Length: 259
Image (cartoon, rainbow, N blue to C red; front, side, top):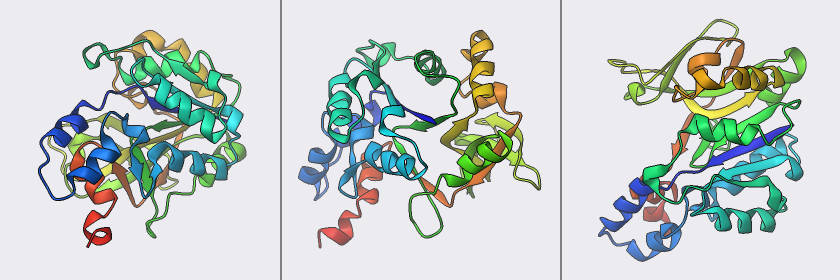
């Protein structure tokens, strides 16, 4: 089983919000965020990607089978992290992009990376700035995704319920067997619903399907817009998405820790 962490963003919104922050924890937040990609921002004293690595290891993914897709600007930081945790340096892919203005779409980076990975094995896919949790506020156990694949060959995706602002995400519906029945990326006029948490397990069949549909897939923001059939949905309680300095502030509970 393989895993890919998509980490090719430039974090411009996070950088802008840091520059505008004037609160009492400016020094601590600057140390956590300044000149770092979002995946290497520390949450609870560990980089986000290290939390993801721990989830993957518990699900049975070996270090040699974990890959990172990043850009030229942050390549060396991710390479250093990978070597520290035991991931082979050759598993860190550089898409060559140096500026946010030239960044690639997620699906383009995904297709570029999976072309370099053994497509005869299932593939976990993570967004580097996202963590998903259960009702006990613990990182979500990914073993149900592995079991669904091993038992029935299903691909799967993690979702969680949002009472507000669901239209900012990919919204999905499921049947009584938790099988995905529809997926719409950022639908208008949707207030609440089950939304995409950006954690996937693609079967080898789905990887080949995406490759065969690569031209059409490049027109999509999310692969589920095109290949949503045959997915199981694993529900999380909530997710943490690092987009702004407020997200970093809240995730690290500075109010409690720094009293």
